Amino acid sequence: MEKLDIKSMTQSEIADLMKEMGQPAFRAGQIFKWLHTGVESFDEMSNLSKDLRARLNDKCYIASVTIVRRLESQIDGTVKYLYRLYDGETIESVLMKYNHGYTVCISTQVGCRMGCKFCASGIGGLVRHLTASEMLAQLTAAQKDNGIRVSNVVMMGMGEPLDNFDNSARFLKLVSDENGMNIGLRHISLSTSGVVSGIYKLAELNLPITLSISLHAPTDEIRSKTMPVNNKWNIDMLLRACRDYQKVTTRRISFEYAMINGVNDSTECALTLAKKLRGIMCHVNLIPANPVVETAFKKSDNNIIERFKATLEKCGITATVRRTLGADINASCGQLRRSETRKEDV
Ligand code: SAH
Ligand code: SF4
Image 1 (cartoon, rainbow, N blue to C red):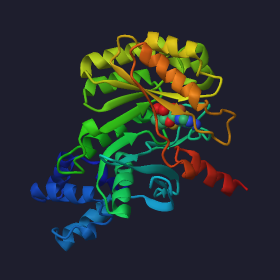
Image 2 (image 1 turned 180 degrees about the horizontal axis):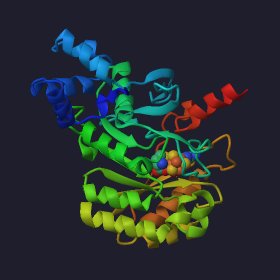
Image 3 (image 1 turned 90 degrees about the horizontal axis):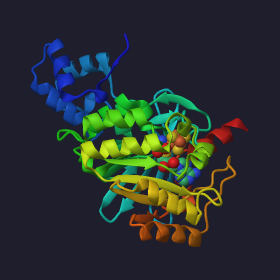
């Protein structure tokens, strides 16, 4: 019999399980709390009887991740992890320290099927989805390893969260549960390459998270060259979904824009972008593109990035240039796993 992934279960699902096992309902609250402190075995649940712990262990497993590599930036203290999952697959997470607390960037899939040309995560395609519990385990592992509490989460690591919709939505529900990690949804961002069907499904949930759209280009011609998803849902369809999403949630939307030298960084691009975003309450994050060994893209020069930002602002669109964290440890997602894979290939 396949064991149950108990860390992906809500408290009320655990309550149903308790009923099935002939246990009082209050056990569900005890178990749920333990799971989200990051325990890795039922034996750590000291307020449960030995017998119940053994029965739980027969029926269920507690998802966890193991640290394979840990790289700490000497510049800003950013920590990048390569974690191993139960089946030997590996994923990346990054822990960043800001003035307001600790943010973890989590992966939502092993690999990714979206195939963006500038991204290291998509090179080998999609291997599998992560469970909600494996997303949570990335947070508890970082907390334990550093003796800290995580206050913010960005779903911006490897994988496309809206291509793994149910598990991502379940993660959001669990991580914000007040008996669990209790991280407010307002402290969570979900980044998508533009899976329009998923944006509409997310709008139905009407969560106060921040939706972040990886736009990266102002025209279909440019976007389709680097992001195959644009052939399915073009920029007009994507921005219509953003407008509809905003009508429901009233939340400001973030647009990510990786500045790639000579590809999308002209003043004309900035003007077209500003025009397209008109009427959307939004903020643009300009990201100096990270060089990936396997791709030929280079980042734009700093003065070009500043000029782009100034053009957007003149058009009334707020923009920030993202600070590069962990520049000395290759902190952008997908790259560490790739470099490990390359080593294994040799
Ligand atoms: N799949 C989701 C979330 C993970 S990718 C998405 O695409 O939005 C997280 C962010 O990193 C995205 O904005 C993505 O476009 C960006 N990214 C990927 N490779 C990059 C690179 N080489 N340089 C800069 N940003 C990159
Ligand atoms: Fe996937 Fe995002 Fe990378 Fe595109 S940028 S391949 S969607 S992880």
